[in-house]
Image (cartoon, rainbow, N blue to C red; front, top):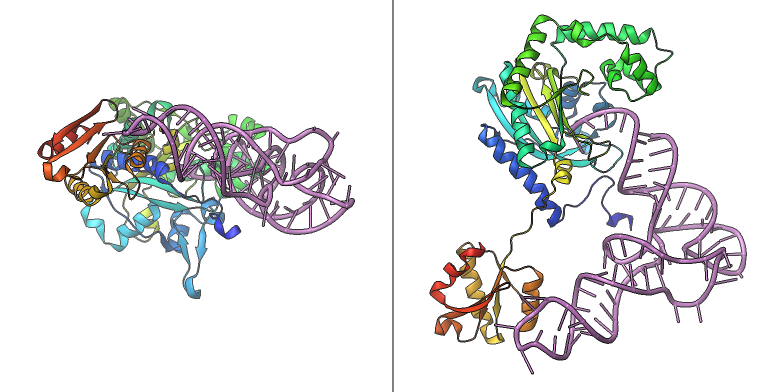
Length: 413
RNA sequence: GUGGCUGUAGCUCAGUUGGUUAGAGCACCAGGUUGUGGACCUGGGGGUCGUGGGUUCAAGUCCCAUCAGCCACCCCA
């Protein structure tokens, strides 16, 4: 029996869920296109090295969440845990550096070996937007604006909060990191076990700890703002000015940090309280060092990723399937004529349901059950007489000439 | 990976202090009546009670293990 169920953390997307899923992705793709972002795609797996180098050897994703394997005992391959690394790799291997700036929209499945929860699967789907080759704050502003607009059109924006922070440039970050590590080391006996581990890997994360003892220490910790150099400080101001100009509301959250190594300057996150602990719905930031880390020519970049499942859960208006027009032969002798009529309507662009069996009563029941907008009933002599009966389930029925049928049905399209 | 809660038909749930062939509603199928659907009537299929052990004369009901989901931590989309 164990073989006949999905692998832990995976699930089947049946038609109803798939409509919600597609609604999210289609909306995102459409909005992104209005900003000039074109869809692209990369393989679902890459050499493990691509993720190790871009995400960082010590990141949680790399150390414990990757699906890594060696097909036929050969090279090490990893199912992508996120999209940016692959896009950056494609940018380098495709020699795209002379086409900057580049704007990409992306969507597809991602894989992380985590303990499943609602809104957190081992195979899940993301939408991504990336802007490469722009080092100006206006790039950051546009990226955030695309995300906000997608959330707005999905009608979930007002149920999220945009949190914003700066991680500074590498120089500022190094300086702050050193000070921070020093500070926490002097209190290492009071630090929680989790944070003790973070001290080596990603000390900035301690700022976001939920442990009560940690929070007390964090309250007295040095502030990143005091260690930002002038360039970084000014950069952040200009990003904020751009968001203000667009009327995009945000809260500066000095404790907002990113788990992946490649981020610099702007970091942001649209969060919600509707999804429990999985509150991050759309998050990203600037990654100016990534391309270089992967072996390409230094190229600035910024982007975000959003969880399709999480967004789909937040969308309250579940998209409905299109109501078909049912074609029903009134008697067995009309079956082939019904077949031809259905074919004709489909060629004209109508969504048509044609049953495979049953008498008139049974077919009508079915038409009603599948929520048909109308039924076209065809008698044996219908085609010969050039008439069909169109029955609207709400208003009744009427007999119309064959030539007028399409016009009559147009209202249901 | 840690801690906790849960697990009975497709779905939502009942199942008394362990005791004869495990139930309901909805859904599904068939028939009837509407005689071209929706309502209604009748009947039917479907569960090795997550799985595997154990205790017992007897377990859905007790014990252990395991799997899965959910919640929190962790992490993140």
